[in-house]
Image (cartoon, rainbow, N blue to C red; front, side):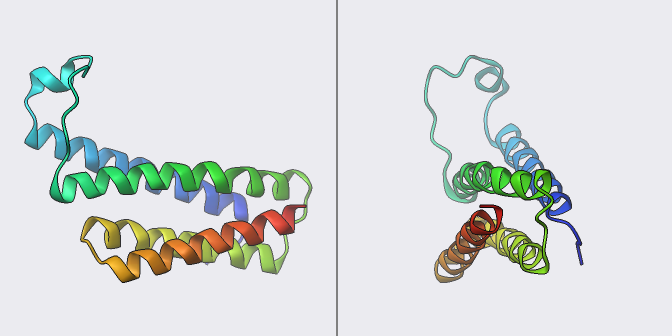
Length: 129
């Protein structure tokens, strides 16, 4: 499996970018190009799977924002350990499961893996302190 927290952070960033690409593709398929090319001052709601993907993306960006400082601090301080690597791997696995669980509306699983990913983030902060 992945052997450094920084590699895991980069992979998670890539996964978040892929989710953004999927959301954008869905918007192109379901909305008129006039609206998509506009300044979007008129608010339109994304419904169903596309709406859930939008919310999963927003949550993923927040998770990325939270995890990055802890991993960067660990890397800069050269404080990587088997425990911090495991916490980063757990975070990544939880987030990989989270997005499809949210998009497909699997409520209990979505909440469980979100909680696991968040707790792994907290563990990384303690490791970085």
